Length: 65
Image 1 (cartoon, rainbow, N blue to C red):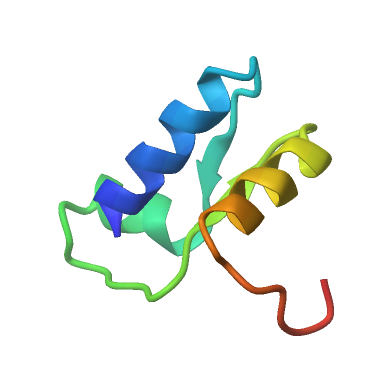
Image 2 (image 1 turned 120 degrees about the horizontal axis):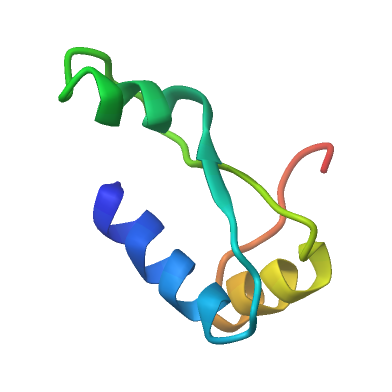
């Protein structure tokens, strides 16, 4: 999961979007994996750029957002 977040962060940084990791993954990093999660929460103002990158990586939009 951390590797996926790193890849996304690198791709976003190339487009001047600086996401912030939040939620369970942040807690997992902080507690050195004492807490586990199955998703990645990021906060950013680059929604359109993020959506484009995820689409190029073949992620599919599912759910309410």
